[in-house]
Length: 299
Image (cartoon, rainbow, N blue to C red; front, top):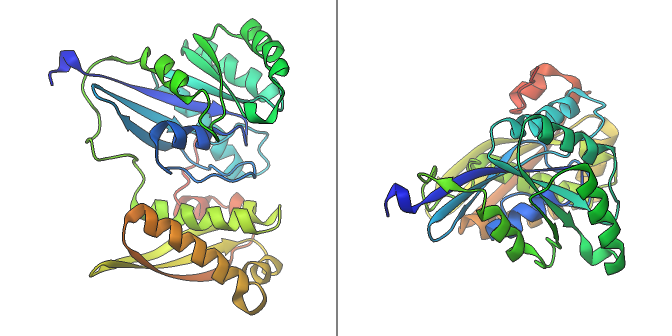
């Protein structure tokens, strides 16, 4: 296939926390690339998801939700989301149809307008609202920004996903594929493994505790037909440590079991997982800890 016959492009997925950006990414790519939970601020860094079509390659950039930051980590997450808009060909504004247009969407639309980035509005979670509630929302968004299309979507069920892909393909320009055709994400195996563990912590723990948690992969060692993984779960308080461990280690076992099963499905091999819990006071405001965990402070 010649360059004249192929097309490609980078598309950012932006929106407020818990708008379903990562679920949209996974739906469009047809694989679990990003972790998803009902809790806001699940995604902390940019994640690339690569969709290979018959003659095209779409590179999606999933981003953290834009919010009012309370920690240095929160500031990093906002910068990562806004920074993603700088270098893409187009964007998907993921909006929660059950919440309506608000300040986070206003800010994102202003960034898109300022940077002259064309965008599609994915009005997500339509499975949670009555159909008659959609038209007023679509009209409200259309008044604020000249979207190339407004697509009612349920990333959870897949309703509207095919139409969204059709619209996104219009943004692609003739050019080469940027990534090998067997590559679906830019994340390393260590990063993917850490996210599987963090997803289960977000799912199973009390509301506030997971946001003060990070996962550090200490070792991933391949043996014949299996991978041995050891990891630290980092939390901010000793009281949180006991909750994470659980009575008789019950929570650690639950998290480890479910994370291991997801990893085995993704990597296609046996996983042996060992977990420890470490307390690092106020790590989300520590430049040293953020850097050691892979979060680079941006100015």
